[in-house]
Image (cartoon, rainbow, N blue to C red; front, top):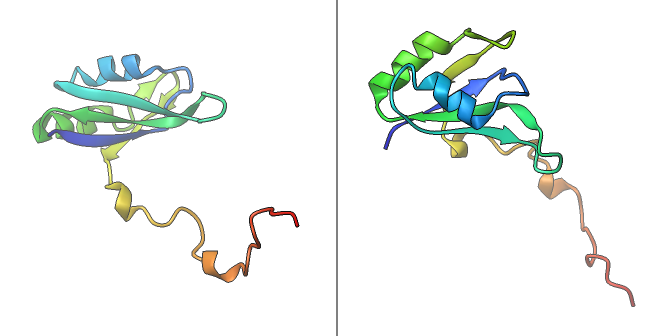
Length: 106
């Protein structure tokens, strides 16, 4: 398995294919995905590129971090595993009290 890279500050018009083609300059690209909003389908301005080797990943970081793409400076670094990112917003879920019966009507 390759090394996954986080790519931030992407121009919203860039496609996953364009991202993959750019990173192929640094080595073999296993996959390239731009994250989109699940409702609108629009780019969220970041994505992930998986490089086939650690060497290719390091070369891509060196080559494309702060790289100007369509007027925006890319931010490229090694992706962090999902489970280490935190809870996704406030740890107060247990403090909200009883939510009731889920809309049951009597």
